[in-house]
Image: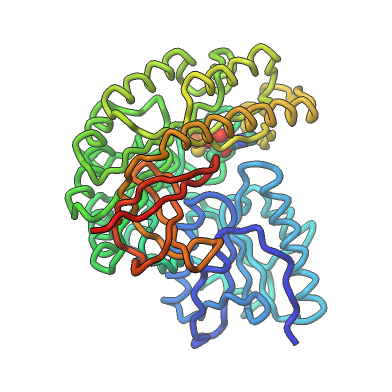
Length: 462
Ligand code: 5AD
Ligand code: SF4
């Protein structure tokens, strides 16, 4: 009898296609963290499949379990640890041949701990070493010893690897356009876990997007830690976006994530001029106070950021904006926290990702500052931020009632099979009756109701 697994807090497990186990072993891959990791897992799946491995969505049937990990905040790491302990216990009791691997952002930082001190895993592979996975798995088989490759690269972009798409809806896909980050924001561990910034060849990106369109996809999200600093020879991000937008008017283009300091005029013009470049920009501000932004080493002041938003709204009328916010960064005073609330109230983002500051080893903040805002205060400030933003999102959504949007149908709604869901150009999720519609169609929907997170609508005939 199969055991029931604890509920998994990851993104893609349920969407992993079940493949025949036709190779030397069957691999179960679980992904934590950001969209970039989802995209990386698609590359890992491709590397493994080409080496003859099968993929399974059932961890209890797998010979190899790989967790693609996130290190951005401490609780992300703790979640992975608990999961590793679960698999280690399983290995001891039920399947001594099971191989357990850690991929991605936790690999570099924790390899000694995971391999030697705690003996939690057999394989540790960093984000630039996925091509080496088949060799490492083979090595573990042959020697019975653990295997590691956490070498970071200045060149690797996996440009030539055709990702195995997990996305069962076949409509939206992630396309990785660059890797790493050179920004060194004081709080962020990404430059240490993912290494230096490098851009993927533009031709391979455009070809991948064309291939996706030909295969029926209708939306691509171009991914990088800081897409605005993309550069391949003369091709900068605005040019790349423009080129991808020419592939078909039926292909919607989004991207994530941008840094405000690199948001160029040319990029805003592409938003303005190309209807299929979605009228939505994620522009992480992180904080509303210039002193804190300086301590965070973000490279802009609160006023400069506000001016950028004003300018963006002037060039791209109706643009939808989202952001990232950190509460309780080192030395944050009550007055500084109030500045974040004031900025949110002024800008009125449609959506925000909001976090409590979590000190990360090696970062500038960990080395130079003290993580001195008490946990209780961080929690209270974060909850004030969330409460405010939720009411703003709700009010923004209420203004949508009565408006008509073109929605790309993505698939069944989570709540009911009789309903479908899809997003507006402005990245708002809409739920509506199925009728005779199917995924991949563009439909006109009149908005009839909302929550702070979702719109409800009726499909217009024709
Ligand atoms: N603590 C809390 N949030 C963080 N982020 C990055 N590093 C940290 C940290 N140490 C947030 C930032 C970033 C998002 C991806 O994660 O807001 O934009
Ligand atoms: Fe981290 Fe800053 Fe780079 Fe974003 S831009 S990945 S927050 S260092």
